[in-house]
Amino acid sequence: MQNSPLCFFVAFSEKKPFLNPGRTALEGKSLNILFVGDIMGKPGRWALSQLLPGLKKKYAVDFAIVNIENAAGGYGCTPQIAQKIKSYGADLQTSGNHIWDRKEIFPYMETDPNFLRPANHPPGTPGFGARVKPLITGQKVAVLNLEGRVYMRDLEDPFRYADREVEELKKETPVIIVDFHAEATSEKQAMGWYLDGKVTAVIGTHTHVQSADEQILPGGTAFITDVGMTGPHKGVIGINAQDALARFLTQLPHRFTVATEDIKLCAVVVSVDEQTGKASKIERLKIDFKPEGQTFEDGE
Ligand code: FE2
Image 1 (cartoon, rainbow, N blue to C red):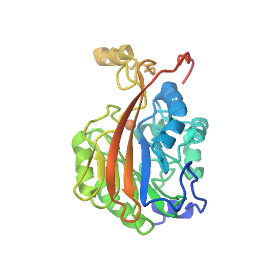
Image 2: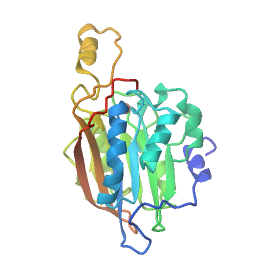
Image 3: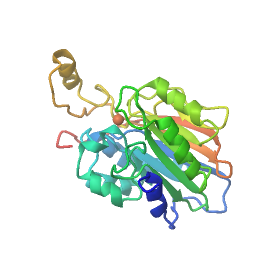
Image 4: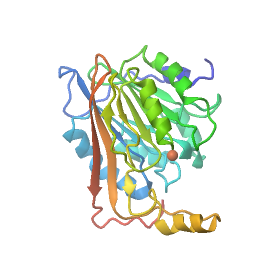
């Protein structure tokens, strides 16, 4: 237990509730949780900054989660960018395999209680894999970040790891959101069925292509194979097409640059009974964003 990420989230459990606009403790028992898919570079960050406040208001969002693993030029995240995304209205940030691309984020992970990396890493890995956050309603939301193993690194078994984490998180709240950062659709769908009835939602990230299979599984768990990417869609998963083609056609190293056109924000809104933790609805969002004069060629 000494090296488990769980001991870290307990130590950093916060007392101060979130005060999202338009919400009081006396309102109904349904929580709305927004999950925004992978932020890709400066275009993705700009779209988030402009759209997130309106989305939180429109959907009466109680808690907003944003995956930021590609937020810094497509490769990881820096402390400065994490702070900016927090200032846009993200209550908690999740990540994935690319979070290790920027070493400056390592110490930051240890200090920001609203920043996660996949939990199923070996003992001693910097950062935290799960958090429990209090809401103004009096309820708490737990977020668990896991990474798949099919066509990815050989981490600890995310299924068995989920068992242990969910058991601990359930002691604090029935509302548990899982960001499953994985490549294979089969592994993601398997995780949805594995955790059905045990958690509120299993939301896939990493592939950057939004799937149209959002559903409530029989046990009351909201599921989508991949929530999609927030950033430029005219390219190859957010990268300029010519950069991606150069690597595929030559098999030589080639620096990738973030594309700039056809920017969209991809997300889901999950409605959940705060007493049972069961989801009643999952709504998929794919919103076109026009940057109106903002350019993205200058830096990450
Ligand atoms: Fe990823």
